[in-house]
Structure formats: C-alpha cells, structure tokens
Length: 127
Image (cartoon, rainbow, N blue to C red; front, side, top):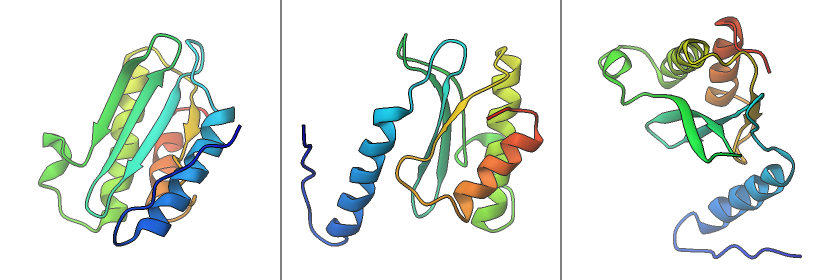
C-alpha cells in the first residue's frame, strides 16, 4: 500500500519528504498504555512535545515553548527546546509515566530535536 503526499507551494518538496518520513516512522512506532509515545512537533519558531496513549487516543502530558513558564525565557531555540524536554518529562513523571517511545515525526535527530530528547532523558524519562 502506497501513500501519496500532496506537494504545495514554496518548500513543498521538503515538507512532502518530511511527511513521508513521518509516515514511515508511524508504521512502527505506537504508543501503548505501558509506553506512550512522545511526539515532537517543530516549527521555525516553536516546539511542542506531547505524550500520547494511542490506544485511547488521549494526550497524557504536554509542554511547549508557548507555555507561560517557558515563553518569557531568554536564550536561543536550542535552549528553549531543552526546557521543553525537561518540562514534558516532569509532567509525564507526575502523571505516572516512566518510559516512552520517541517519535521524531520525520525530523532529523539533531539540533533542537536531540536537545529536547536529551533533556527529557536527564529529567528521568526512559526511552
């Protein structure tokens, strides 16, 4: 079964390639009740991290650069990604989650994505 991805204007080819990679990853990565999925969404300005139980379709914990506790902080985007990783790990631990499956959503595991993952690991989240 092949899935097609529509190409829009502008950076359409780059976005279409990322969507194809995300589809490939999601074929194998699924969040369960024991190990929910940590999804990272990255835009040019902001980062959002969510811990999702795919069996129920519920978001168990989330954090983003738009949160009040992070929004006014100084620093570059990598530093903000580290703060988001630590915050989502703290909220996940408060919800009783010890271990997650990491879903990078087709993004390369470098830069802000890696910084968020490393900060979540340092905060005690296992993946």
